[in-house]
Image 1: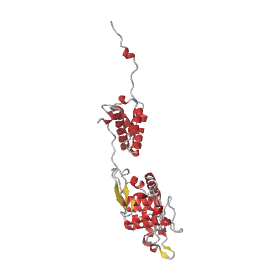
Image 2: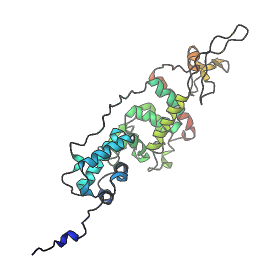
Image 3: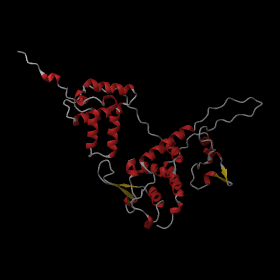
Image 4: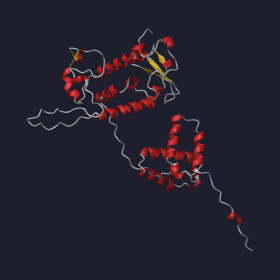
Length: 324
């Protein structure tokens, strides 16, 4: 006598979806910083629209490879795809999926040749520096002199400044290495930082030490200054004018920077421009006026540039120059 198998009629058991497991996994990561949490959320945001409704135990190596290929066709960078695959692997590890298809060696990332970073020369840094507003210019000068991270610069407080050391304390919760350390300031920049602070009895210890707002604002200000500098291009030389017409000018600045530069005016107040010691941007000797007004960079010693920058920053904070 044949007995029917009733288990075939039972509803198939379904496991949790990848979207549900990823939300639980992100909530469990209380051991990481907020920036890491944002990175995980961003990386999974590229995965969930494709595999979010799949159960975690049904995802195969071919599914992960199809995910990589889809993101590559969408124009995602190789590092973005790698971060998404790593986040998917951590979610599957949390769901105890063995073996983990996202960690399989058969999953291949697209080939991408790394771009060689070309650091800017001092002339480019100086040109962008004059476009920046004074608070962001001070932040750029400190980054250049100390080599600290932008996040450490934005998190510095007035109470972290040690005037005896001429340095500020990068606290352990801010440092990437989780170890506190002192960052010393050069003498000229230290005088600028202290000069812009109010009197000691009026200082708020929790106030920002450097007025850059946040690291994102400083990055955005630098990016906008670079774009603004690139918009000031030089028109090509015009063809010779006919004999009955006056000769055309050799070229002029176009774009956003249409104002005449101070270097194009060799004399002011009856004195050569290079004899003025007002510390304003654009001070150039007369022999360099022709090259500067056509956009050619002037190569001056880096120390001279920094002194001019520091005088410019201090000049904007003269209301705080009272007794300390």
